[in-house]
Each structure stands twice: as C-alpha cells, then as structure tokens.
Image 1 (cartoon, rainbow, N blue to C red):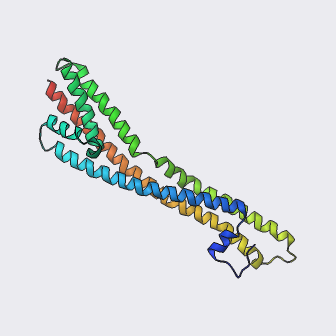
Image 2: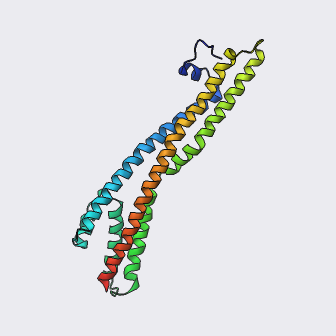
Length: 226
C-alpha cells in the first residue's frame, strides 16, 4: 500500500491491486474505443446530412428523373443514403415498366416501394452501427468502475488487519486508488451517453427525411403511370 508521501495519480494506479488494475485497463480500453466511435459516427452523420441536402436540392430542382438517376448510379458511394434509396426505387420502377407492366398496375409501384424500403433499412442499419456500443458503455461503465472501487476498498481494509494502529493516513491511499476506478468509469460513460443521445436524435431526423422522401417520390411515380 503506498504511503501518504506518494499520492500521485500514477503511483496510486501502479500500486493498486491486480483486479483493480485490470478493471482500470478494461475501462480505459472501452473509453478509447468509445471515443473512436464517437468521432467516426460524428463524421458519418455530418457527411450524410450534407449529402442529403445536396441530393434534395438536385431532386427538387425540377430536372429529369432519369438523368438524375444516371448521375446517381455513376457515383453511388459518394451520392449519399437518400440518393441510393432513390436509385433503388427508380431502378425497380424502370424494370417494371420495361417488363411490360401496364401503367396503372399495382406491381409497377409496389416493386419500387419495396426496393426503397429495403434500401432505407440498409442505410439506417449503417447509420445506427456502433450506437449499441455507446449505449452499453454509458450504462455499464459506472458499475464496472464501482466494482473496482468496492474491491479496492475491501482490499484496503483487509490490509489494515496487520496494522497495530489504524489511522486515516494508513487507509487513505487504498481508498484513493479504489476511487480512481469509479472516476475512470464515469469518464468512459458520460461522453458515451451524451454522444448516444445526440446521434440518436440526428439519425431519427434523417430517418424522418428519408421516409418523407419515399412517400413523396412514390406520389410522383404514381402520377407518371396514370
């Protein structure tokens, strides 16, 4: 157990018991992974918002839909999620028309609707990837840190059994090193919770925009087949 003359953060961590050190290491790794997902997801959502605005401007500019579809098809990866949803519906609609479906037949629009719903689900799955990890980090990390604290305090008091006279100076280092585990757990959990709530809100807004576009695009296609 470290003495009161050496109460630096590094010293407390290095002198902690092995189980507490392992818990600290686990929480640090989880925190690093969490921050990686936070930054990558922020960039992904920001890029998706910009691509969605750009495609909506192109779509509602009144240009030819076939020409827009050809432009999107040539750069699907760079066009964005909404453009890929549009391309899936337009491609299925064109195939149905070429297959000889009559203009007013249900399969003409049903195929486009199913294709866009499938594309929509794929895009949402991609946007929501790693959010579960952030949610788990935010909910579990404080308890993992608390486990390290409980273990550390227990270890500190067990060590007092061999001390003739227990003083605050003899027990303080053990308690301090144990509390570091809780601090690390909170350091991992708080950013994960904030990021999860923020990104879930942003993704929900994108989802509403995608669903609204699908309905509006189907209305346009319906007017074309009449």
